[in-house]
Image (tube, rainbow, N blue to C red; front, side, top):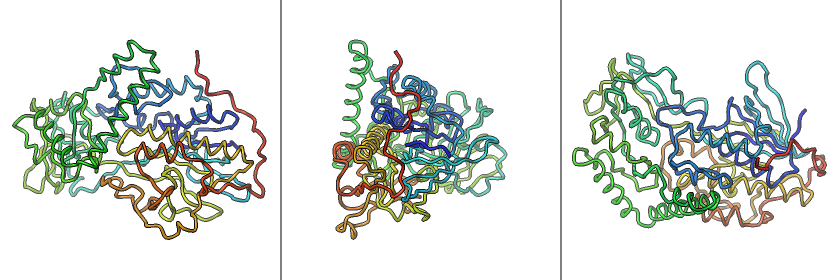
Length: 506
């Protein structure tokens, strides 16, 4: 049976970040990146709907170690895939990635200090097992098998076509067609203006409004810096600038929500003009950043509304008819195509079934350790990015932390690290894994996620400044992580290295 020191699950942004940090900070450790799909990229390979793009600027969604040099900072999906492929090639990570390898189960043995993984391989290869000493979960936060697709009465009656953005058909032609997009999140806000370029008309039907903000898709400061400074300097400065701005806006949403709320609504009123009922269609009932803000590059949705190519209806759907949607208000919306942009199906740990010494792990029975690991679950770190900033900012932090843990194990001659509650932690106040965020896609699964406590390190602050202190700067040996040597663990001696990685090509 094959053994590697570290298995990274997933070859999206988080997994590529993990590969880079492992090759740079733990060059003597063997590792493999197991990807269930046939290509890298995760989200950016999966989603193929019209206009698919980042909803954060690429100077913060990009990696800390790989400058984003394209002119547009709000990038389309294909451009992001090019960037990810460049990263994998530049840092020699290609040989580490095994495609068509989906991890379905991971069983930990404290006696041997190893994880035994059950891996389903694509095609006729069949299942296999693989062992590792450390598991780095980078599989994202939603199911790749299907999106969230709620039941609508009469769906089978509709004579047109119904599609979900997560399973976009290549043969779909909406030119000259009447399109209805159900939803008001980032995906809907992207699809609507993109389809409106050639559709007869696009109607966005939403149950409730979402905060939206228009920003240029080009960062003029970044591009100006890029013309006069080395690209790494220009990128670092822009990344710092944009990170600070993200944090300032989020902080204002917590300290002065009414002011920010009015500023956002006033911006929409100015952009769409007097013919759109902003109070009804763009004024949410919650405060800004209680759910993610939707970014409109160059205000594309606003332009489509002004030009009459798009309309918005805020109502409840009673069901489908032969020719469209029947709404609770009595209004009927005619459609040739209905796009159900109704969200993701959130899952934990890439739907991998965990067990420790023969006992299944229920994450809801665990406490989150700094939002990166779980009480009483050894040798596992999990990447979950920010809900209020760019995902990659946290992915880089967590992957660096995992490497620090691995190096501490090496330095101390131990092979197991497990977060353990201290005696005084036993009666902590129980809080949800993420607080202050009401988005339905997370609330649907919150009861299945780890508990958050009321003291460090049993917190998941979802704040970059707090995470820098809690994850990046705090000592590894903190009195909570238990380091020990297994009775029958593998030798601590250096393993045979895989082909060199981590050095950029000239």
